[in-house]
Image (cartoon, rainbow, N blue to C red; front, side):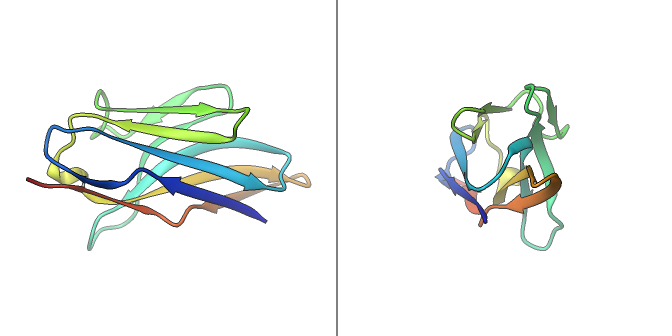
Length: 119
């Protein structure tokens, strides 16, 4: 079984910064891509950013230039540095990992962490 544990959410004022972290644990051969998604009230879950095992990144247009994803392959962790936060960034943020186990690719999700941007 694979577990993804997120941390770092909270309340921040507009223009502020937060850093989210996600650690993967369990039995697996390798972690392919890792990423962050978010879901605001009444909206569908959407992609925020992803990063491959080789470090290639992809960002939603709405966060480009403000958010930075990074990962530590040795520690099986992924981080999301969020700067210049806006009220529209308010959402539950979910960590995702594509993990190969016994030759099969699986998608795993964390439990989510709330990010609220408000004055």
